Length: 147
Image 1 (cartoon, one colour):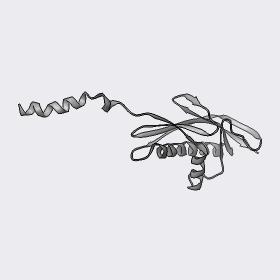
Image 2 (cartoon, rainbow, N blue to C red; image 1 turned 30 degrees about the horizontal axis):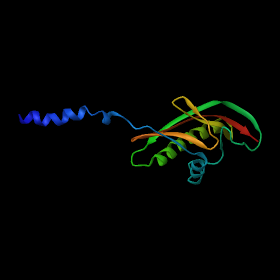
Image 3 (cartoon, helix red, strand yellow; image 1 turned 60 degrees about the vertical axis):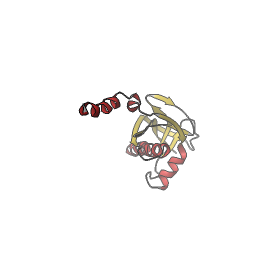
Image 4 (cartoon, rainbow, N blue to C red; image 1 turned 135 degrees about the horizontal axis):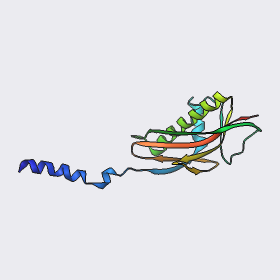
């Protein structure tokens, strides 16, 4: 009889549906503030500029390269959603910066969020999805030479 009483709470816990459902909170956050912070902290080196689709690009675009995509996730445990989203965007921007430098480009233009293959366009914000464990950002854009 004692053994069956010990097993009952364990079996009941397996049937709780809330335990298996993951959080996926959608956020739309300021893009430029994350870029500025990443530059100030040395995560970006400043050789590549980032322009969301719809932003004014100072100068003339003289060459573009094929579209590139980057999707990054980061640990969201013990972080606010906003802090985790900032880290994920930094990782995306670093990968775009590396891609642009390999091509001899000095800008990434027409950047849009592309989470789950769905495009979100804003001249000021990026989309991020945060859960209890991970936060993720996906974007696409084109490396370009701007003079």
